Length: 103
Ligand SMILES: [Zn+2]
Ligand SMILES: [Zn+2]
Ligand SMILES: [Zn+2]
View 1 (cartoon, rainbow, N blue to C red):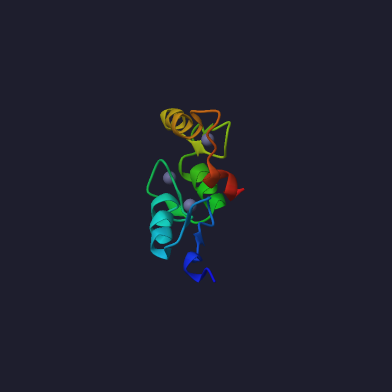
View 2: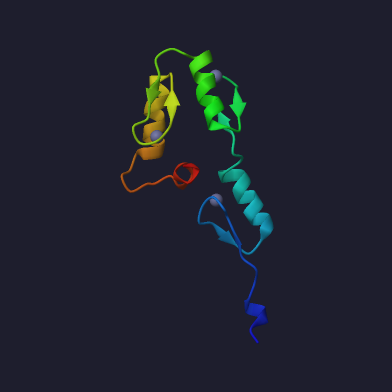
């Protein structure tokens, strides 16, 4: 009899976000997981496949690469790596669900 209390819940497939409005879910996905695109940090190259991005990096920016020791992040710019580590792995408690879910 509690029909009115049962509202449909929409769950984000990428993280734990739950909402009763599909509009909010779409807005959330756009804001937080805008696409499954991988962007080159050194140029405007964008791809939907992580492999392609890696091979692009190898071909186009084949200079020294800096790999993040905490995830698959790769950059040719040491500054970018430092910034990445600061943003993504600044706290030992912080876990990026987006990155781990990709694996
Ligand atoms: Zn989400
Ligand atoms: Zn590039
Ligand atoms: Zn990382």
